[in-house]
Amino acid sequence: MDTQGTLQAGQRLARGVCRLLRSHDFATLDEVTPIAGLRVDVMGLGPKGEIWVVECKSCRADFTSDHKWQGYLDWCDRFFWAVPAEFPTEILPAETGLIVADDYFGDVITMAPLQPLAAARRKVLTVKFARMAALRHHAMRDPRP
Image (cartoon, rainbow, N blue to C red; front, top):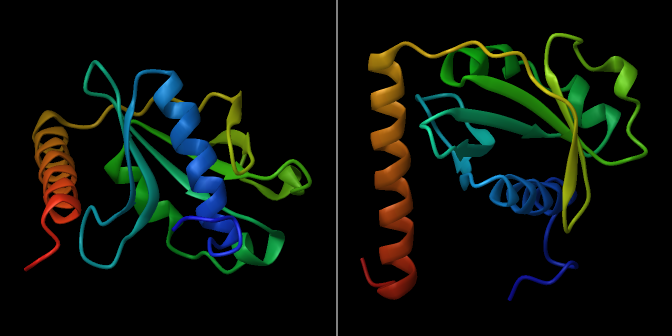
């Protein structure tokens, strides 16, 4: 059962981010691995095939310990940080987007710059996204391996 007590702060932020993106007609998945060694917190697939990546950071220490985020830029059209309202946003890189979120929703404060993916990479990511979503759905309906 998903109760606030069992979810970590970053997972609660991810839930709010997913609700925000869904309100903009994006399908979302959390904990997506575009390639080995990279795991993004939230990936959104928009109605026109656009891919957004959102990294959720619950506090300054969570952000300063993340040394892989620049590797995510090659795997999305737009890259955002999602943080709680009390987060010191001045430490975030200016060339990225900003979402302020909580457990239940969020707001896009700064739109991330558009860096369009190459067509071949977009296809690979879209297929990966679709397969991951279908496999997760199947596992919920039939949890046996």
